[in-house]
Image (cartoon, rainbow, N blue to C red; front, top):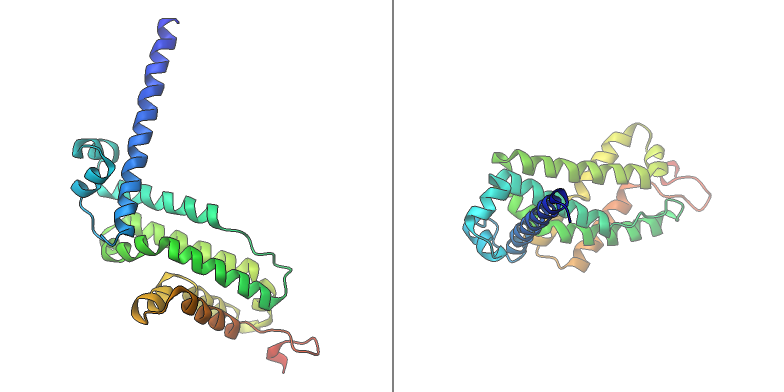
Length: 211
């Protein structure tokens, strides 16, 4: 093996080790959030990851960069768990499948979302993450319920705003953390809310709004 190949192998090895260290730190941060530690210190994160505090700061420089990396990991998990709901399904079935999946995804991000609320006013990275989640949720609603939103006529934007609020974490937190509903009961409320907001077809083939 020539010197160039040896050098490249060493660089590749260092890069791989750095990636493993970064992943361990992000995983440790998310694990602590899931356990209820909503403001884990850098020392606790490093200890949980099995790395030195120096290694944490070498890889992330500051907590903002760690928040950004943790947010990116959660986005990856959410996208991996997401299954597009077929828009050709009848409305009641679309709502059923959508709300079941939405509940699962909201539970997935819940620990990080609860922690983010404490730091968002001081963190551009966390505000960016929240904007991504809200935008992503809104776009899915627009795609999945395009026909029903069109039927609302001049109320389309207001209906879309209401649906976005009802299906994002602020409302889910109210159901789970303030009203203390379990996941099944919170999902039932979510389903009822979405159903009430969207005009369905009447037996005669018109819409609920025409009745």
